[in-house]
Amino acid sequence: ARHFLARGARHEALGAYLATSEEVTLAQAHGADARLAGGDTAPLLGVPIAHKDIFVTTDFPSTAGSRMLEGYRSPFDSTVVLKLKGAGAVTLGKLNCDEFAMGSSNENSAFKPVLNPWDTTRIPGGSSGGSAVAVAARLAPAATGTDTGGSIRQPASFCGITGIKPTYGRASRYGMIAFASSLDQAGPMARTAEDCALLLSTMCGPDPDRDSTSLDAPAEDFTRTLNDSLQGLRIGVPKEFFGEGLSADVRAAVDAALKEYGKLGAVLVPISLPRTELSIPVYYIIAPAEASSNLSRFDGVKFGHRAEKYTDLTDMYKKTRAEGFGDEVKRRIMIGTYVLSHGYYDAYYLQAQKIRRMIADDFQQAFKHCDLIAGPVAPTVAWKLGEKSDDPVASYLADIFTLPASLAGLPCMSVPAGFGAGGMPVGLQLIANHLQEVRLLNAAHRLQ
Ligand code: GLN
Image (cartoon, rainbow, N blue to C red; front, side, top):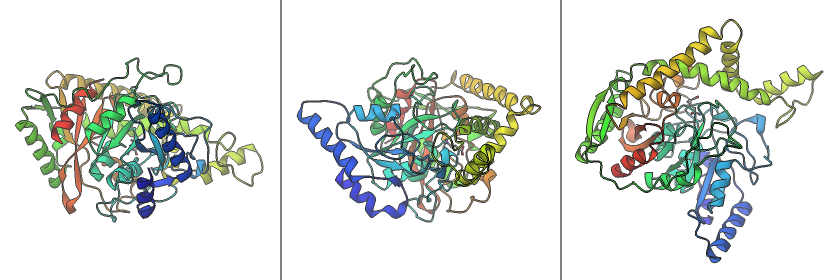
């Protein structure tokens, strides 16, 4: 823990951490030592790990990357954090992210950007940019992230690490500051699939009293099939993921990884996910709609920021929200409120829900012909800081390959595939059917 704290301090300019405390971390580390001395065999005893600042924690402030929650202390730990602590993990601190997890570059953090350690003029991806950079720059052996529309997979891809979003409902959302509740999922980000499997085995499990969408699926040992043979595994390759929007360098790295699977005995099967393009408008209606509802709790009364001067209650709400939220969050609240409003609900929100179902059905059709799906995570490598910050739509379009699996609630991951333009890392995306995380991790592990 001392080593990682010192390394974190030395590389503070990367912007990965929002909060650290030597006192808290070392106290937890000593606690782990004592458990070890007492014969405790918890699986992560003494393993240092850092958390995306979307997970509420009692030992550190929890901000979700927003001024709205600056300095906020939660009275409880999120279930995922609690489970990891129970397994013996030691918290290194809280990691930077896009405000309320809205973004693809980490530039929407209210506090500071995060720099990609492979090239510090580039973004690390988002919204779990701090988590990806902490692992890539070896400021932490592993980190937690959350993925609503790609926020684990895309920064993992851009920073050359491994990250998995489990099936929706596998990990409890209790204590994860909500963005879009029907999509939000927690997952680990680490160097390898094996490390991810170890963490995921602790993070998952039913939590029916605290998260009504938590699945009634028992916690599993996700490491048990890591070394299984891939002989005969059918890997579906969706043609829509290899269209003209995909840059040549990323395509080359992904093709090379697919070829590697061929050598490992897998069979590549051409498939189609015909509504891939629609996942962008569908996601950018549903996610803002849910966000506009979830973020209504930040009104200056119960949590965090409250405007100093105001004339009456309505004025207090208005000033608090105007001051506390950043531009992207405000944009999404406005879009979400609009698509849910009377007269527009049927045309936008309801329509989006119907297409969401069709996108999920397309995956079920595809899984009749294959066991796993593989393709790129993002159309390009990490872009330059500032390149898309004035153009939210350009940023939304770059989410095209991660959104479909999110809308369908499927487990999916990013595993390092090679390098593209500027020597930047490229991830391969793997998608499995519901509750088939072991298949994903097995395939990812064999590639590493
Ligand atoms: N980039 C997507 C968005 O901005 C996904 C973010 C996420 O998964 N949290 O909403």
